[in-house]
Image 1 (tube, rainbow, N blue to C red):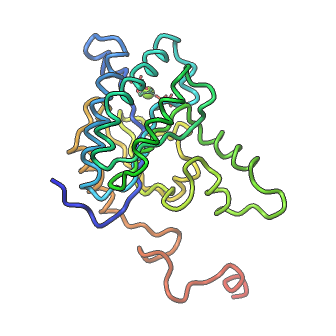
Image 2 (tube, rainbow, N blue to C red):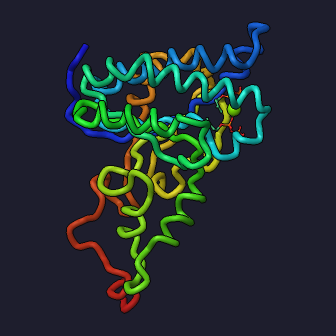
Image 3 (tube, rainbow, N blue to C red):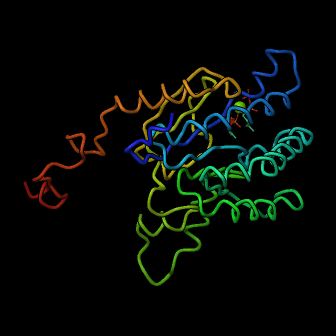
Length: 247
Ligand code: IPE
Ligand code: IPE
Ligand code: MG
């Protein structure tokens, strides 16, 4: 099932609903997070065949530090295990893995394991998987502004490049959120300026390849205008603010 899609899209996913999935089965929340790791595997497997070049997965928000210590510990434990068990397979299948978000507050040793996984998969060209960890879009934007050169006017391009993992291809084409919630929860605020939004009631641990394919089908049925009138963007004789204002 490897019909390498012609489009090179960036899809972001807010993987939500692990706790509710577990509660519905009378299991601890941790069991939902563990099951969620399976859904991550399925999404990574399906993505290249659906024309996805970059997949950004929201795994832990900076606000998730508010959760009970045991749950946070379990989440990072799962991530550590995921890195150890999957990295070889990712490298073999041409998947590049990187982490966006803060690295200075992670549990001991995790930042080093992340750097190792990033190094081992750096050559991957089939799919770029970015995992957002201790991530806050507002925090990222504030840091980018603080890091901007003082001697030149700050432009959107400069700021885009200064964001973690910024630069070409950072703009999100499609944002998916599972579990029926319809909010951004501080995820990729800048990069989602023109993202198409797809909300599904499916809880993340149940999210499968068919769900991703359905989201892509939904996306391909949308007409993106970027403020213009034609789906392709701007028409041939597009106005500029000055010309339009002059009448
Ligand atoms: C998403 O599932 C995973 C993380 C936020 C880490 P939740 O843990 O938010 O699940 P619900 O929303 O409580 O069901
Ligand atoms: C957003 O989900 C963060 C992740 C999916 C990692 P939350 O479950 O934390 O978001 P809220 O609190 O419902 O907005
Ligand atoms: Mg949630």
